[in-house]
Amino acid sequence: MASGPMEVCVQNRAVHENIDAIASGPIAAAAAGVDGGAFPQATIDALRGAGLLGLMTPTAHGGLGGTPGDAARVVSRIAQECGSSAMVVCMHYSGAAVIAAHGSPAVNAAVARGEHLSTLAFSEAGSRSHFWAPLSTAALDGDTVTLSARKSWITSARHATAYVWSSQPASAEGASTIWLVPADAAGLSIPRPFDGLGLRGNDSSPVVAEGVSIPAANRLGEDGDGFNVMMGVVLPLFNLLNASCSLGLMEGALARATAHVSGTRYAHLDSALADLPTIRAYLAKSKVKVDMVRGLWLDAIAAIEGGRPDAMLRVLEIKAAANDAAVEVTDTMMRICGGAAFRKDVGVERYFRDARAGAVMAPTSDVLYDFIGKAVCGMDLF
Image 1: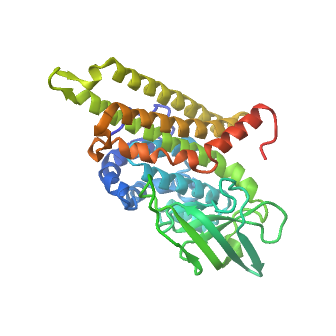
Image 2: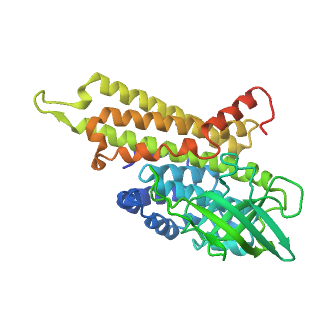
Image 3: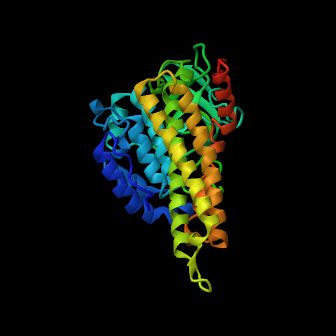
């Protein structure tokens, strides 16, 4: 159930048309099962069939050569129907962007064909939300690198083809190095499955690496240059796409709550819930909040794609603004739907739960507000 048409400024009309049909069709049909804990395979299959898994892969490798704005609109539209699906795609596009910048032609071609589902493996228990400072180690021995790590969360942990993985440098100076680690590499283990409040189908689990050997050629970027890859490639796109998830969740919840209060009546008064001024006021305030976030989201897209000087500030702002607004709006939708909001068939409580995840995903809202404050004060972020 979409809350409204997407912007006419979508650069790739085929992407727009395909994702709208896929979201309202197979993704929406599978959403309840995904919320029950099933991985959103129907989403992945549909995106593969439409070529959209290769959206962020350059055309030279057979991909669609999409822009951050294209990816943001895809993720936002998916989130209107299924938050778990949107987060899986957010992580895939973020990983695919690193592969596009630093990966081999063969891996890029596999992504373009839809044969490779990517994800990020940055989060660690030791560094927590400071994802740019991994404790994982990498030991270089000729043409082989041996990795050891305790990753705290990896989305699509059991379903990804490979992880875009951070570690300390193997031999160079610097904060980190990025690797492409096959998910079936010997020595990788998943201690427990995901069982969380929301985003229940995104297969986000801890992953432990004990003496995992991969080819040194699997390095993505230069040894020791992982921080620049994170800041230059991953952070702008991930923040934008994470915000896109929150925006879509807000829109989905607002649409379903509006349908509920418009169609539910007081029999003894012969009036709908929406006839109450207080209900309409809550809806109005939430609609304003959604549209404010959408305006900042569109400006962030313009800043990133236009290379504007304020692009990094917008990247920091949009995730914090969208994540926190999603918590507020979905809470309000639960409030106006009353006791009925606790029923799954009304369709609001799933968005309420899913919306809680964004603000605690690194960089968390609190970290982002610190960064934004530093930027406003002209201070170095790190």
